[in-house]
Image (cartoon, rainbow, N blue to C red; front, top):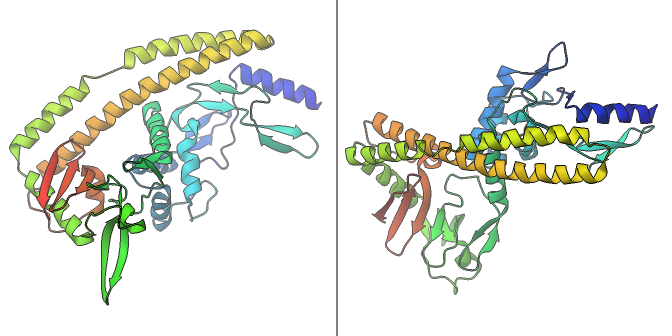
Length: 360
């Protein structure tokens, strides 16, 4: 009986027939026929998670924000964790696809399931159901996840852990040694202050002579830069030109060609499921094509995100009729790419590519 059930499941997987449990799956419900349908209320939460992640927020910060807003998890809890966010960002089902047999049963009596490390074939079904986020956004999130896992800074390219607690985390850079600055609570001779210091100097002050910068100085520099752009008509014209340039860079036609090849190979894969050699050869071709498709989607998504970013900055500057009075964390996430600390100045690099120096 166990063998018959297993063969039945494998046959359905090969035919692309998918039954998914939505009990602990945020964003989807099932209809009478067992098909996935979007839960609009929960889908807004999923979109918010992807958006905030791509804006630079850490998984812990996103989880804290959802908890503070009293938004329920897939299991109905009102407390989120960074692991919850990671699982959502990594789940291909949110872009409409389904990877089957991520786990399998090793004992039909105890119902023990283990992760599939290649022991049995996995089946990847594309466009299985309606997506909550586009494939471009999903792949962009995977690229961002890989970038955060492989952060290196300084002349010696030391590996760093991504910090998303503050908007300036990882963005403040030392001009002397190229390392990042770290936020520190300073207590010197009874004088307390929040400062930013180069991590090289924190560990060994003889290796770097960069200065320590008070946090309010960095905040003032950013506010001054943003205020200098408000009502700058020349800058708005440059932004408009950049937006049109990015809009003209599209790769959709090539992605469609890859899609056609993938669908054809998927059909051949089902027909050769019992022939191990043919099955593995076709599977290898599919993996190569998926990799190529992912590269194209990322290129497309990168351009789309850049266009949105430029449009967002343009809209903000046009709507801002009065100068900023105070520093805003969300503004830094929207506008600032990097802050470079020099001996007598601070250079602010905007996400549009422009660099503005402020004497501080």
